[in-house]
Amino acid sequence: MREQLTEHDVEKIKEEIEYRKLVVRKEAIEAVKEARAHGDLSENFEYHAAKKDKNQNESRIRYLERMLKTAQIVSEKSADDEVGMNNTVEVYFEDEDETEVFKLVTSVRGSSLNGKISIESPMGKAVLGHKVNDRVYVKVNENTGYYVVIKSIENTGDSDEDAIRRF
Image 1 (tube, rainbow, N blue to C red):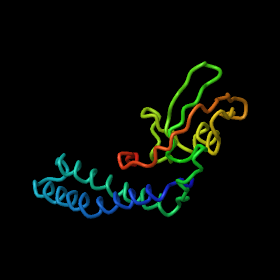
Image 2 (tube, rainbow, N blue to C red):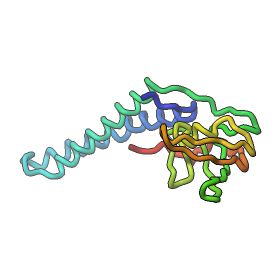
Image 3 (cartoon, rainbow, N blue to C red):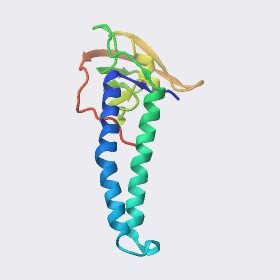
Image 4 (cartoon, rainbow, N blue to C red):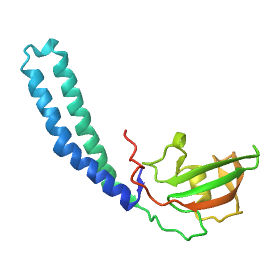
C-alpha cells in the first residue's frame, strides 16, 4: 500500500532516518560491544537486549526508507472554503445528534485519540473537498454508512508538534 505523505511528512521521515543512522545506530553498536565484553554470550541478557535494540533500529530505518520509496505525495493546499489537509473540521453526526471536531492529516500522523484522522479513513475520504453546510455520506463498508454535516472549517495548517507516528 502506498502511504500518502505531504512534503512536510517526507522531511520529518528523512530527519528520523538520519538521526537513527548517525546517532541511534552508533549507540546501539557500542551497547552491543560493551555487552559482548561481559563474557559468556549464551547467558548474557545485556547482550541479547542490546542486539534486539540494534535490530529494531535497523528495522525502523528499512521501514521508513521503504515508505519514502513508495509514498504518494499529496498537496497540503486547499481552497479556503473547502476541507483540506491540516484543516480542523467540525462535523455534526445526524444519527447521534452529536458534534465532533477533528484535524485532517496523513495516515502517518493519524491519531483518533488526539483528534487527528487520516485522509485515507472513511471520514477523511468523505469530507475532503467539501464545504460548510455540505451533507456528506460516510461509507464505512458496502452495506453501512452514515451522514454528517460539515459545520465549520478552520485552516490550522501544519505544525511541528504533529510528530510522525512511531511504529
